[in-house]
Amino acid sequence: MTRFPLALFAAVLAGATLPVGAATPAPAASADVPCAADAGWDDPSPPRHVHGDTWYVGTCGISALLVTSPQGHVLVDGVTVRSAGKVLDNIRAAGFDPADVRAIVFSHEHMDHAGGLAELQRATGAPVYARAPAVQALRTGHSDRSDPQQLVLEPFPPVAEVRLLADDGVVEVGPLRLQAVATPGHTPGGTSWTWRSCQDGACLQVVYADSLTAISDDVWRYGDAANAGYLAAFRLTLRKVAALPCDILITPHPSASDLWSRLGPGATAPLAAPGACRAYADRGRARLEQRLADEAKASPR
Image (cartoon, rainbow, N blue to C red; front, side):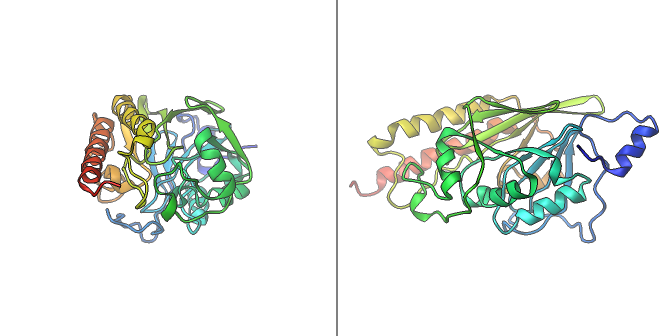
């Protein structure tokens, strides 16, 4: 049974009108200072209310979101092994119970975003949903040669319960409906997520867009003929992200979408920014083209 924060319960008794999944603001942290744009992956952050049913519960350097409802919650992304406990603490500090998480989804199968999934699953009892290209990596804790970065990746704890998700699958918990968007490129299993979040009559489309950086180890090359299909899929990803309805953009690395200039103490820009997903995709496309140019200049094999 879902446990409501006491303040939320009192508000309901008083007749207040609250959006689905809303909670009272988190208690003020003793040192709620702005997160640095170049924050370390495991630098702690207090929870921050994003909009409506959506809360930021990650660290200063790695994102995790909690999408909430009275029927249960969805946790988006798994941070590092070291920071799984911080996410659980942030869920509680925001006024929610980790036991009420009914589903866990994630961005891509690297240790900085999947490292904490095993611990978060143990603490919540929730299954992890993954597209087919990421399932084996989650179950074993390491990627194979289909991942451009495979030779330089660190392993992470295997995830016990991984459920297969269609490329266009939807994860539903109560009134929540999180739409998966297959976005391979940074990894084969890369997945972005989008959902509608309402507050005080304002309904906005939140997009949690996966990393779009073209990075590899010293062996894998995006321009190799053997990887033509992968490159085509990456280009399609960039077009899809650019075309997404997108009011609030958040990325697995907050710095990639300038999140700390838009959320939390010291924010100087609006949280919602028209054209944010297109601009994010354009930056990813520019990096991919630069990477291909650099490969072409290198000595042929």
